[in-house]
Image 1: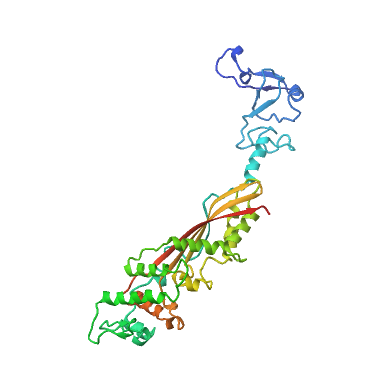
Image 2: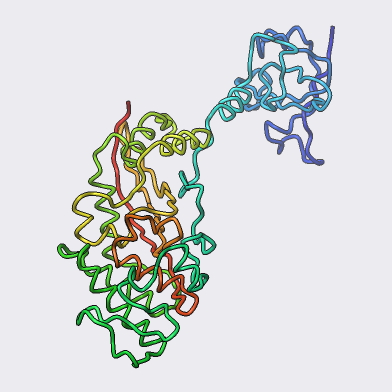
Length: 380
């Protein structure tokens, strides 16, 4: 049976000037085509074009360019580069383009960096938190609910005449001496700083707490940051060699789930890092040394933490990653902070009155710390 194979003719160019891809229609037998061009069983149910790479019909190799109506049917060519072939002719064969498309489909989508890989449920910049309240308690509430009378405070700042205890001279000002609100506040802040020395008397961080108290006294409510606190955060994370160290868990997870063949971390495995970090120990200052260098009273725990994978470089069987930590805490006290034990320490009674009493109401603030740490790992 004779079939007509149609090749493309471009314009009305002279045949002598036509390229191998612009051949006139050639009529030949399908049997001869089978023998000379390809051993594949070509299904001729449809129109298609044979583009010859050489200027002879017998030339090899040949590239088959499909013009079949692939929207509703399968392409009849087993090795057609269109990628629509579904096995109509030579069901055992798959086109190179189909293999390439399948390869692209199976290649995991890489995680786009930088990527936030962990965040606490508590939000950043949370000014509605209970320990951020200020000026919301009356004298009656302070006295009756929190037992902050003159004897408990060591002063009578909450009395109606605003007389203040002179903690350095260990007695009250003159019986008839009345102070302004600013004078009361200044006296309380001086005592606040003085008492902080009990918790902060050595090391390079010992002055940070006094800077934070003074920041509160300015009453702007603006966030506080310090290079020293950033450094302290860096040291705490990097020096934590416990099994629950967040940094070590991140390193181990990267080693296990990196796509080493494609030199990336799969987007589909991002959740694995978050789940792993969830069970770790997040940065906090609670060592014995922190109780005397000022960090326990300055920061202690954290309110919100974000951890970001900033960069990831993979070479052979090793990787280098940069992990960024953003940590926020609140320099403020809520009702629950003033426990029976804490209330025995005058510094916290002073702090509570300065922040929560309606006649003073100094604003607490957010303390923010940031640090980036480079880690390395090897393929497991």
